[in-house]
Image (cartoon, rainbow, N blue to C red; front, side, top):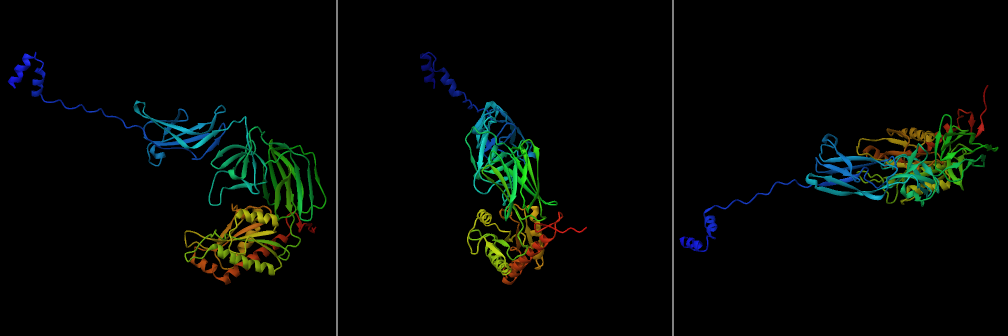
Length: 519
């Protein structure tokens, strides 16, 4: 070492630091400063999570899930609020926000951008899976209904029977669309009323059309051998809604977008189903037709268009209120690939409904009725096809036969179902006779949103014979002798309905003729 020191002196001391460094311990390496993890977005969606069309005044609702305690925003800086865990099922980092669409906003089928801002301006961004469109109120979006079974829903609710239906519409009816959620369009029926319609039953029209409206013309009311007709001239096919009311019996039809210019109503001689006919202008864009009916029991009606004239066809009662000569439609539920309920032992609903339906057909034909069947073998028949089939064949009455099932094996009994209050007497008569077979009562159910209960053209009821999931009921359902008892019970229920219908109504009418009055 001394030798190296002397050498360093000779070289001008340039090695002095090196010598000292060998004696000094090395300094520890510098530690990195702590850093904050970047923000993370784990989910971002519109609420509901579906493609949407919104118009001015509608609310765009969104939700983001990510790193808690930060600043979140959407749609170019609109703030999101982090929910307390108590409002977010105990979770932190759930942010929600609402934006009310303004008349000047424009957005054409875009995904919504979300941002989560962390310390030091570190940010995370993402986009919604669904697209949003802001509608321009100065360019109305119009559509036409298509198909034979277009229908309106009250709202966006869904279950296994579909959304609650407001009513059916004819084809080529002009609709003003003001919103969309998923596959449902919102329809502006009037200034204060909206409904929803499935995407598959409408055809969008190109821009440039006017919001549908019409003045009404003067009506004509007349009849033929089967129906009474009420015809209301319009300039285009407007949407409508009907209600069949009781006590007193009357048919009420609201035409949306129509304003009265009716100066007279011509009523021809020979009417048998329709009595007084009146109207009122409920709102500037809602025209109400009121058809007072001559019979306590309605036998059905159909609403549609001939050109741009709205035609209401009211069915007269059968000439003889008895089984002989009556046309009865029988629907054996399910069939083919549509098995329906299956019991623990393997019995299938489609087989049981067909067996009962065939026995009912035999009993009715022996009584002189004409019987129409949706199926007589194990084939697949879509419910819409069943409805269209009977719309073409014009039965006097329909009975749809099904087998019930429940998760609780102790649930048992028979039940009947109707949708329209005017058709309740048929379901009640069937229910009472089914109870007489010894089956427990499960109930008579109204406002039933099932396809075969939807038609207004004829009284109809659905019979859930018994529960296939209940061992005692299953034993009865699979017994051919008890199947025969149920078929006979349905025949008697139909006879009971006809007897009740023969009784004079509160307006003093019987079978389409004035009943004798006693003074």
